[in-house]
Length: 181
Image 1 (cartoon, rainbow, N blue to C red):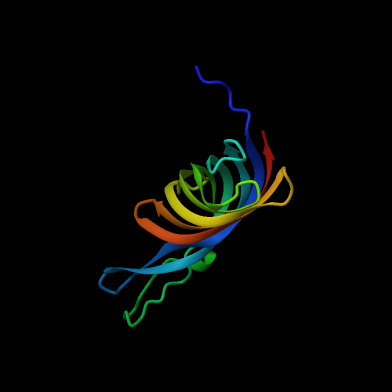
Image 2: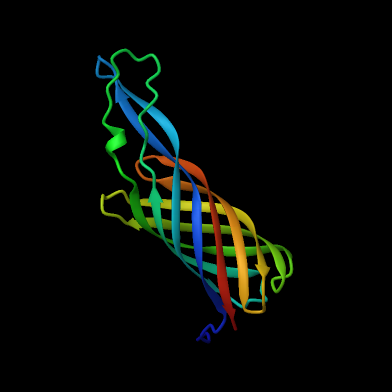
């Protein structure tokens, strides 16, 4: 049996980014068209790292609340008599997101400054409107140890979501962690 892990980190983080949405509209002949849009999202949450603070490879556990802006009124172009739902009446959709992954130290010292690459998979699984999704992301960023126990970090990730269709968008994660051994 392996021994219990006694090393890692806990912290808070914020996120902001863009995600793809589809706004549907219809012609006089009942043809369906799609306007693909990049919309803002933001969130706040908790993060835990598993692994010794002096190691370059650590496990990541993230739990976030994420709010996605809804689609905007579609650009119907020259579609004659285009009709669409009232997208302006929609409000943000919210999801509880759980992600698991790995932080890979690439360059630098884990106890000072370090360039990192992350890979995370997860799910937006807590929703009120049944809009759950699966996500996968890869990112690059950095960590900076303010003190021996306090670490600031930032990471820019390319996020892929899958809910009825695959969509992409960038997300920025920033936070502070308390490191312990």
